[in-house]
Image (tube, rainbow, N blue to C red; front, side, top):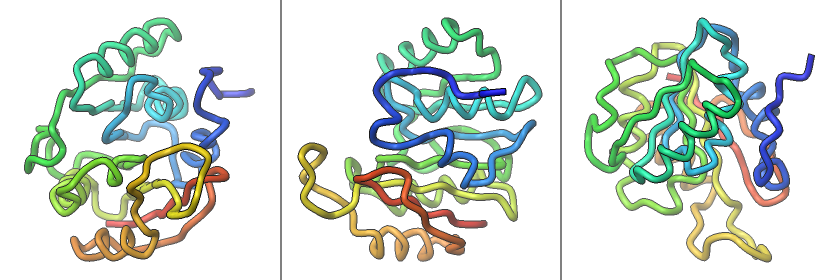
Length: 184
């Protein structure tokens, strides 16, 4: 059975389904997607993978992005996805309980934010002990598109380790990105 949701505009750059599986997603998990964006590509895939007994929290600072993700969830009959408005650069802005998440997704967020320490601390705060953070960013190399400002892989790794997350592994989710998996 193919569990992938056919949503255009994502897989060409990052294979969300493969990335989520690489990060250890399983049925019944609770997942937080920091900076879900207007397509909610990771959020929607995660919601399908965790199944009806799991939950996904799609988090973004843009109300329009959250409305878009809600519409897509309705379109694909996904009922286990909830949206949360939050400024991730403010401590505890997600208002999710401590140690309540089995997986946190942080995809293409650091390059567009300044307060990485607060964002990573929030991810750690809501992660259950032994759970994973999936961090994906643009590789710091010339690309035909994408942001000018990019976070070097080693710099991202050091920032996550500085808040107490433990590096587990890295993988290549697409031609222009790197992914790092950390454990709490």
